[in-house]
Image (tube, rainbow, N blue to C red):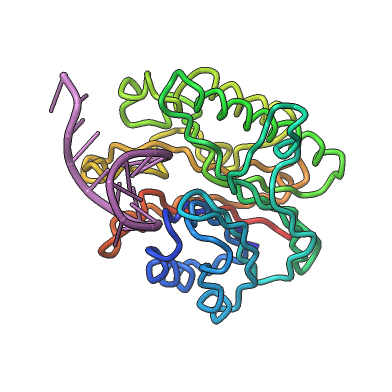
Length: 266
DNA sequence: ATGGTCGCCGAGCGA
């Protein structure tokens, strides 16, 4: 089973390149982020015509996540726990998390489409929100381990894990994506027992998933911020991982992110 | 140096 994540930066603006990529790459499951539409605006029919079931957790103008799957999806659940309880002072109405269980040929895999907060400017309340959100993700990720299932938590984490995941690390020193606290939040999830699948198979660095619209693609001034974190049961089934960087240079209006994928025996 | 470009949607915000 091929499982991919892609921040499309508006699913409507990216519909044609998305359909072209799906036909070429043939993923079985896709997690989309920044769809930037409400559920009713999601181009469901276009994806269904390629054989995908759709699950959507949308929002007007900003954020929004979705899952596409060629296999049946069950237990579709939007939102991270802990975001809608006024008693704890947290009220999170951003559409940033969608989870589902996929029934493959030889077993299930639990997947989540994740759009973690950007957190800029640093420091400030948006950075505090980022760290609080990542802590909620950690707590939920920990609870999922108890199920002892293959789990793939994938999406735009808005975190550059290490220096080697940026072409020009010094340029990011004052950025929320590169703060030690952000990197520690990601490591804390990995330390529970999750594996950064791409890093595990490509430890050398220099591979990026995002290039800004200010000419960074032409200079390969990229960063790796889109990640697939695999539970132990998923890591046991991991057979490959890649980044489809050609998508950044293809077509008239590419997303600033490209798809990152894993191949698993499920 | 601190803008450059996108996409939202119809002004400025978010990235």
